[in-house]
Image (cartoon, rainbow, N blue to C red; front, side, top):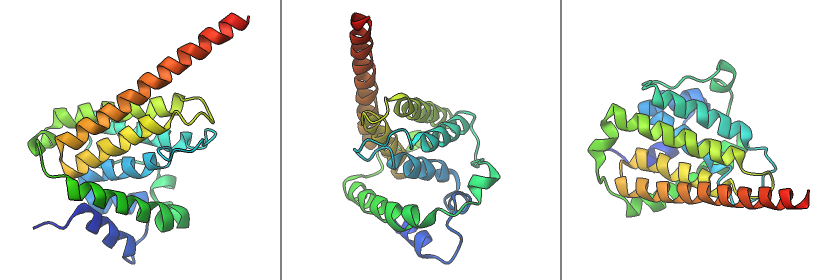
Length: 198
């Protein structure tokens, strides 16, 4: 029986090997795409205004989503990012926090519709979903906190890929779609207000 994903992630975190996105990809294989999206989008998913500092994370998530759409089996990243250490903030704080949340999902999740996640066409669709949610989070107005829901949607979608659970995927899609609708609605309201002022 394979160990739970949270156990694998914790083992990797505690190992003596390098803590880089490249090393993560080498350890987790094709699921490295989802693991990296999970890590990147967890930062903007925190319900605090970020002032646009998370746009770099969202841009990289878009790059990874596009590679999923293209059907790549191994993740490509610029060498500088691939070999860069995650650092104490991500490896020391963010990842342990993520592991706890992953365990929560693992206790309530089981493989439902797991065969879907093995189809190349389905993974391409999930890549499009990741791109859409990352772009939506990036387009949210700075300091508004509106990037939280699309980013959280992307995190849950990534978890669904890792856990191979279609129900978790549905939850992620609902959260992400709700976030996009909220951004569009508030954006339209602000645009209408600005037009009214001028």
